[in-house]
Length: 132
Image 1 (tube, rainbow, N blue to C red):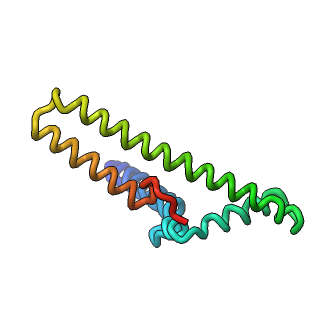
Image 2 (image 1 turned 120 degrees about the vertical axis):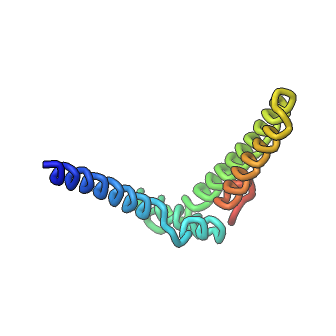
């Protein structure tokens, strides 16, 4: 009975882990295709084509739609860059307010943590710069 229970639990664990690994590989490709698309600007063309497909636009509509879609994408890029700048300013303000409360080693740990998060964001293309 104990052996059957252990086998059942082991089967559940393997099932849960394999499902999680499959989902992770499905939603986050390991070859960096999404990041590469952001850097080379190909996601812009893909987005435009996707909008055309969603609305089933004919060629005349597509010509009229393209400048509107591109202008909207530029606005979104601008909003994201402004949001990134605001977030960096808020983090700098937080550090300034926390510095008198924390010890020097704690401030150093905070700086390491925020620098690590900033590097991760920059690697993902969230550095406030446009990648097109």
